[in-house]
Amino acid sequence: MRVVALACTLLLVLASAVEGAVTYVKPNWQPVSEWSPASDRAAAASAHSAAMKKYSDLLEANPRMKPCVYC
Image (cartoon, rainbow, N blue to C red; front, top):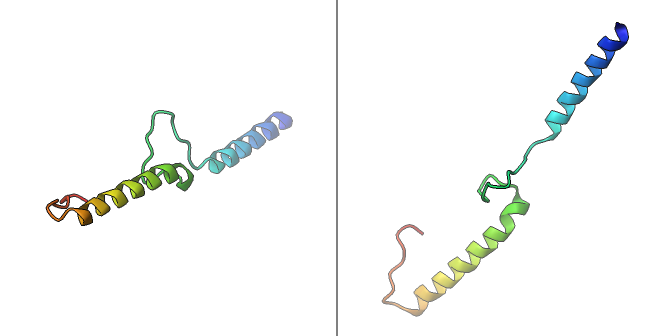
């Protein structure tokens, strides 16, 4: 009986340690967001930076072009 109780206690301790170690699991269907780890955001962030650079270059090159009010 003591062995079973000890085994159950060890199982609970190990389960809580494993649960505490898992901090982030990204589902396959979830898009990259601001809460994603930095390694997941890197590609989207560089694409966004490139798009904003292109947009600002176009704004500077064409004085008739109006800036976006949401950017």
